[in-house]
Length: 345
Ligand code: PHE
Image (tube, rainbow, N blue to C red; front, side, top):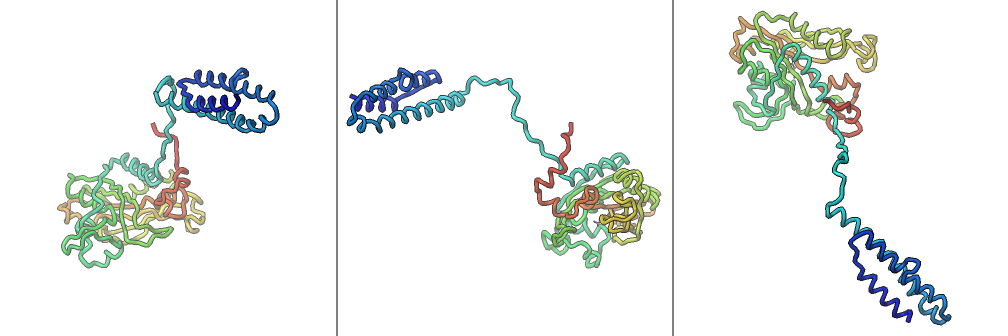
């Protein structure tokens, strides 16, 4: 009697099919409820004699376990099914929030510099990263084999003899293209990525970013250059900022200078960021060499101009006191998240 009942119920349970939670609950009650079939078998089992108990104790327990897990399984299937059939969802619920990224520190600095020079009336110009020798060197007064070319270790793309292609080593190439194509007077800044064959270290990388600037008009003097740089430095680093110019050399400018700003961390007293000097070097500049103007068809008797160029990673390092340039290229989330700001609207 018990044996047959057990076998029958096992096959019924295996064949069970339910479409709704309600049907699952009904099946549970039918087999496992207080008056359920399995419960009844247990009641019957209690009354039988010892020999039968020994024989059917275990199959009966197994039956109960089987019924319990089958009911669980059916419950889960019903839940999965309802969602797959696309059903009663509350479409007015708010969506999953999308995590916003943040700007890269180099982009933040570039934007700040671009905004400052836009206020001064400069346009933004861009040019190719793969350039020819003419626009990177020749037109900028680097004659072939001139030792000044060694200042910037170049990645060559093609080794053609006349005008090889290379990865630009500075965005001064964009200034040349601006002089070739724009009407005078010219006021441009050229942000962009540049490449130099340098060993990667805390202070140097083979890829970095520059903003260079160019102003050409009649009667532009060194005093104009100095004033433009001073105004820029005060906008960028604060109204108390002082600048100083040290004589330097670039093939495309004469005279040339390197510009330091007063250290905005120790205010000139000397700290480890400015290495105790009170000054931080931020850019190179100078009066555009007449040869450079003439190479691009500009009359150097009538026009003069100044140019300047700065490295964005360096400025970002000073601004946030980052001591290793490589952080800017490794895209480590822990570093990048430090620059997360409220989303812009
Ligand atoms: N092109 C120079 C460099 O990359 C920077 C510079 C630009 C210097 C303009 C003077 C004038 O180092």
